[in-house]
Image 1 (cartoon, rainbow, N blue to C red):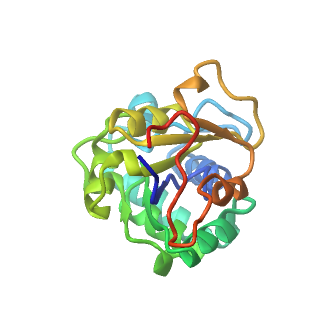
Image 2: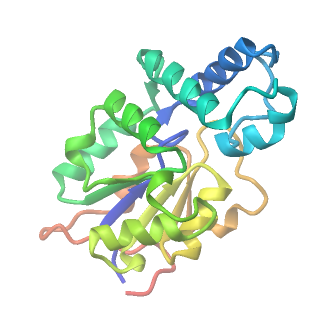
Length: 226
């Protein structure tokens, strides 16, 4: 079956957001007397809800999770000018849009962060929509986010390519039945990367992967049924 749409992860795939996420965590935790080193990598790629679960016992009793989340989001939004697209991200989204390929974003971040990220990239008008953690009953690695995405696109999952930079997202996409590309920009693919249908070192490889025909038909990935 041929592919005709792309479902993008956002953090670490389209936008280099991890540095800002970490600065927000460091700054807000410092307000409550909890010191997290700027070079502490133990929270990299960890969802904010899981971060709270790990550290909340070290806060004063008066600190509430909802308020802490609000402050994290507010810091992130206030410093969003420091966000940068991943190399080739915006160009690839624009190329796919020009070729008539439907695109949707699927994120494990909450709606406020998703909107800030998409605004920083300037690609919202090119998308069919976006799925945030607030929109689903369970986040990645549960298949719910990608199931919602394919429903929004009105397509069977086998016709949608998910582009992810994490194994958590990869598992979510595969569990929902999508074809999946694992984007490894700066590190070697992890041991269980074969879960992916294809491994990418550059996002700009995607248009060639989807080879456009005269009627904007999209080629199958190697190993896909036609």
